[in-house]
Length: 360
Image 1 (cartoon, rainbow, N blue to C red):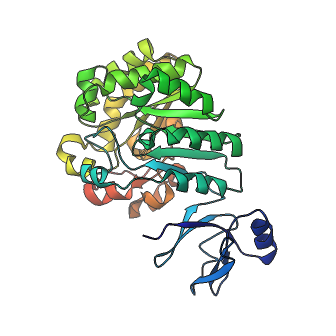
Image 2 (cartoon, rainbow, N blue to C red):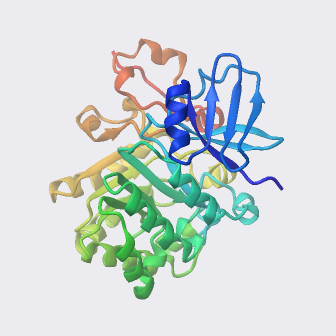
Image 3 (cartoon, helix red, strand yellow):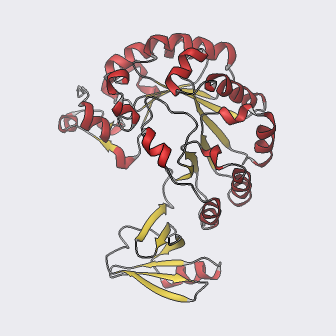
């Protein structure tokens, strides 16, 4: 198996020389070809005769796999970059956008490759997401990864997406905060207000108790936590109780975000159990949103088109769907707030054809 090799994408000889002098490989992108400059072997490898300068920008990071091709793994001018630390997960959520089959058969992320990729970042990103699967399943190597991030790009705002269960282990938690970059926020889901209501969705016994303990450990240490409530037919009747639970036990939350479904993977497989159209979903969310807002908890609404949310709540809606996943209906072209709307997941559009009502 050929291991991936990284390179910094450039479009000029001057920038190529600067990057090479820093000890990093270079991918020279022109309108005629792509050439990989490999420092260890001191070779130039012609890897493509296609126009790559329209695909790569200066200081993007390319991953070159011999006999397979070259791929963009980091976009220098984007705020959507992510480090995937594990494709596996220790929960099996009913509405996860990945399937159980994918999680069971997911490959193991190589920690050395993650460290190498970090060392190839030559820009200073405003935001960087650490994610998975469950990223803590990479094991103790996560401490080396976080320590390198803290050293190399300490001013970046990090969003660490996790189910929070591992942080209930006090020893693990204390090792984590020792190496954590200073501007890190943890995004952790809560799907219910009790072990019964939460664990039936995660399909992992004990996950609620562990997640709540993990969140409390983080908050008590002064670390920002974003609580995420993925709304589905399984918990729509319980949202107000979840809000009250947060007020009572997790009221140091930096923010609480209500998240719409991405209908693929387990969510698509269990569509009859989980799917609700957006307007109906918002009608169940509204009271819970009000409870939190009235008690000075910051609230966000993710993955909902504006026309499915009452106008008085539009200021809470975020354009949260990654650009390559967004789709709009043809009739959305006549909507007067389309430029403000985050659209719909392509997978959801294809599977469910949710209702939209262009605003005019």
